[in-house]
Image (cartoon, rainbow, N blue to C red; front, top):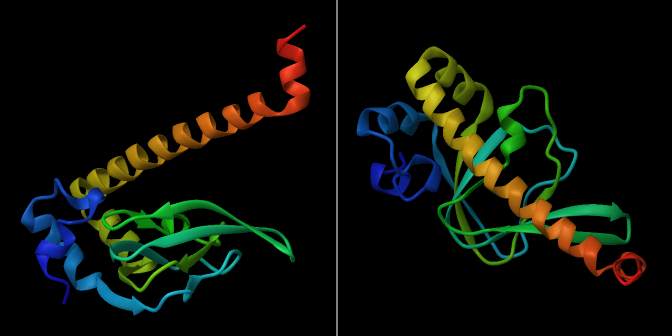
Length: 160
């Protein structure tokens, strides 16, 4: 079983009371991956939500069969595999270990059942999820706009 101290290292769960963590704890199991190991592939059914304890994970998207791009890196304390929180979803990227990694895996179906069963816990979990996703969306939007502004054809419009 994953110790409560390890769950408290996860950004999403830091403010949880012990009774909340104790409800989540039985669903958690630790998985260890070697460098370059694939945790999940883009397009695979999203059935597990992950939280990184140690290591580093790269989230990659396949543009075509010859080109993969990294869209994010996950550091210890952060979560990934968000698609698992939406029933029937598939992962929108691949998760690859850039170094040996230790993750907490939560199977989606029991997790979603627990969140539905306990509205206080469910609200806190989904509110925390929404805050993290909002922050990531803002960061990606800023990156996208910066890239657009730096495009040579767009820069010409600024000089007119």
